[in-house]
Every structure is written in structure tokens, then in C-alpha cells.
Image (cartoon, rainbow, N blue to C red; front, side, top):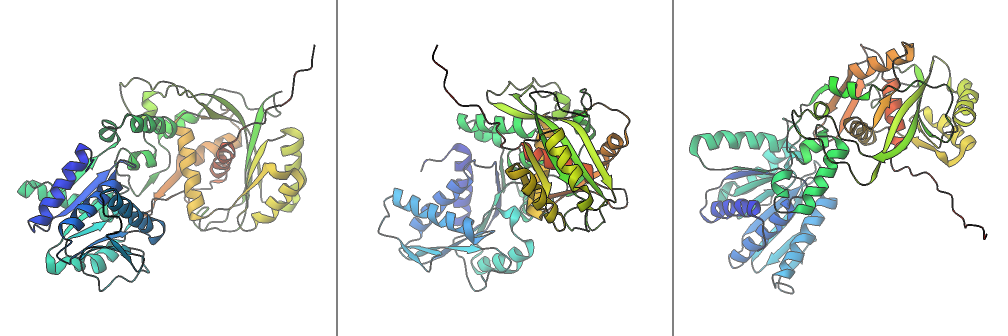
Length: 470
């Protein structure tokens, strides 16, 4: 079996525990796309082969049936085919693969799934353990192997200190101190990159794009947990946003401008945790493209390290150049002003507008007046999380700058919101960012995130034509 050294180390520990009835619970953290699923499939092929005459089961559970469980089933079939078992194994009921008398049973760990009654004799695998409910695992999956003292392996990447994977990991580390038996295996992106140069280049590019302290880079690649809540931005990140360009009241010729519009509205569970939002804010930003600049060490939180080499592909940069704010004004009364600002003043190439709840009529009106350049954005738990992660990526990679201080109320409010914004990281690897209702508002912050959304995947049109003959 073609496994990398770190995969072999895990495989040997699993097989030793299974064959000698040790019943160990192992935890495995491998950086995203580092071969965790391949390791799992190879283990399943080997164990099914060893136990094909004994009629015993191994069970693998995943956080969802579609697509995770289905992908695991398909991967095992492909590996069985590669090892010459094509036509020998059988698929039963859509979630069981049988080789001889041994069976691999694939189950969903979703809260609504019905899994009680299954038993496991060979190996119990918990895929993406950080996304599996601790209660579901403890009550329904863990007891499946009690009569056989089954070996259990938890795979995944870190998130915060409340997950099933993190709890299992910490227990294993404490047990290792007592008996010296290795139970926790951790291989971050640098370890994986030792054996895959293409992977190393990809993750280095992700580090440049997201920033070393971005929650997704920290957890998915560096395997460093985050705290469940805290400040959305550090002092270093806020300092990275502060620019030296002047605030503008009108566009400069030949420049591309984008807009993000956060609308005042009703209380929303996703936009401010139930408070009344009473300001409509438009953020105008100039878009440019350039090769990624070196990232200052203090922004990355690393001392004394050489700056990253520039990327070869151009990246979008945003300079915030203007803010508009209306407090207590009904949306319908703002229609003429917004159209004038977006069309006649700035001629914005793309406009992302809050279309949640009562914002939907305003978004529809603007789209009718300004066309497809208006992109409605509906806030949900998932969409706001993605918005926050993208905003952090721009900040960490120093691709977002605010006009220099002009002591205006808008500038002061903007800085206030940056300083007071809080982040909440959820067990399902999503986040929320907001300003606590008791402290103020986050209209400027959300508007900023929306203009960053407008810059994503934006490519200006290029003139096409032929040269006239001389």
C-alpha cells in the first residue's frame, strides 16, 4: 500500500491495537487534503481482507450522509477495485460493503440519523470528529463496540476547545503521559508538505491569501485551535487597515469603484443578535489589482521571519474612499439619493446590498434601476460566516485600507466598530461577528464586509476589437 511515512505511522498503531485487542481510542489530526481519507480507505481494505473469513464488522461514521458518507463508500470501492477485489465484494442497502464475510458499514452521525442496533467488532472510525456531536457519539456510537473492546479512531482537523475531537485529543495526551503509549497523531501542513511539494506550494499561497492567523488557516492547515469567542480583530489587524490615502467625495478618472450597502432594519438573529439596527451605510471602495505585497511580520504575528515572496497572479486590493450614513430614515425616502450616489456620482461597477427581511424591496428597486451590477445578499448563519472569513482574508493579507483619519463622525464610528466587534466560533466551523447591542452598532463593519464581497471574483471587462488597417 502506497502510504506516506506519517500515514504509515498511524496505520501501524491502528493495526497493532486491532490485532492485539488493545481497544485503544486514537485521535488523528492531519492538515486538510493531507491524505486522511486515503489512509482510512487503505485501513478498511486491509482489515476487510484480514477478517473476510470471520464475519465481523467495521463501522465508519461521518457528520453527514450526503456527501461525506457517500464519498467514503465510493473511495473504498475504488481501493478494493485497485487491489483486485473487483467483482468479489458486494454492496448492500446502499451503505454496506461486504468482502467475504466481513462488512464495512457506513453511517451518518447527523442528529436525526437512526443508528442504534449496529455493532462493531473490528474498528470504529469517526470521520471529521470535530463536527460530530459529543452526545451522539457517547450515547449511540461508542457503545457499539463495548462487547468487543473495539479500537476507535477519530479523524479530523482542529476547531475550538469544545469539540469531540479536541476532547478526545486532550484525554489521549494525558494517557500518553501515564503509560507512554502514543494515542494522538498530529501532522500539520509543513509535515504533509515534506512529502508533497505541490501541496506545500498550494498551502503557502493560501497562507499568503488568508493570513497566518486567519481562523481557517489556523485550524485547517496549522492545526491550531481557536477560542470560542473573543475580539473579531486584533490591534495589529486594525492597524493594518488604516491607510494614508485621502477620503474622496467624487471618483478619480479611470478608476473602478464598488459599493457595499448595509440597510437599517428589523432585529435579526444573524445581524446583531436581536438588536434594532437604525443606520443605513454605504461604503465606497476603489478596486485595483496587483501582485501580493510582502506581509509585515507583525501583522502575521511572527517575529523575525523573512517576508513571503510575491505571488505571480494579481490579487484584488480595496481602498475605502467614502462613507454615507443615514440614521432613522425610511428606505423608500433614500431611493433617489442612493441611485444618484451609486450611478451618477461613483458609477459603481458592482454593488452588494443587504437583502435580508425588509431590505429585499430596496435590493429589488436598486437592481431594477441599476441592473445586474446590483448583487442582493441575504444574511444567514452560513452566508454571514463566509462573509466574515473573506473579510479577515483581505485584512490579514493587507489588501484592505481605510482612508486616512479626517476626524469625521463616520470615521470615528467605523473605528469604534472595528475595535468593539466580537467573533463567535461555532462547533460547525462557522462564525458570527457583531458588536454587542449594549455597546453600539456594526453598520459600518457589515457594510465593509459587503464591499469586500463585491470584490470577490470581480474581473473588469476588457475592450475587444481589431486594429484598423493602416
